[in-house]
Image (cartoon, rainbow, N blue to C red; front, side):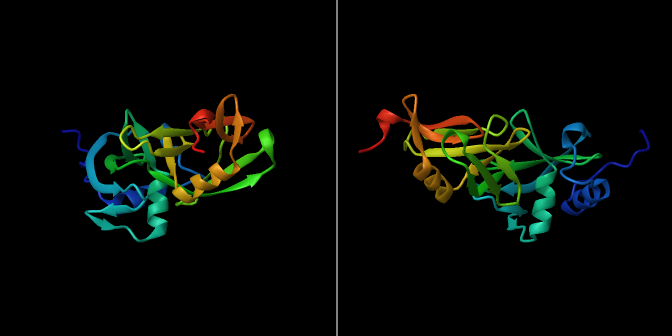
Length: 192
């Protein structure tokens, strides 16, 4: 035995560890590689609601803190501190893009998205928009890369706003941001 006390993961323990290691901005989770401590019964629902043991986590500051230590590795999601790594469940994407601001016009336009936890990302080469079409319903699900392998699902009202400002380019209908065109649907497939 190494003499090191085994870590039992808990939301309070994670919060304490993060607060102790907190610096300005987001913690450097990409640099942290602690041992896996097991799964914690935390779930992020499709609508962005965080829950613990089936009950919603209603303290926004706690959700924001946990979202700052979220990491995705090999398709799995973890909360990571310098000393522990615990698995959590994410139904779809860990974030929801709930709004965006527009600056400029045409191919010089910039779209700055805001997530439900207050993160912002400017759509462009580092933060691409992608669309996934459900093969059964043909419904689009739009996503934005927010940070290091973590996406936000773009909510319905924001997606409708994207469609409202969309334009045609190279046989596609989509939006410009950060001098990059993001296709939403083939122009020929648009109804009407």
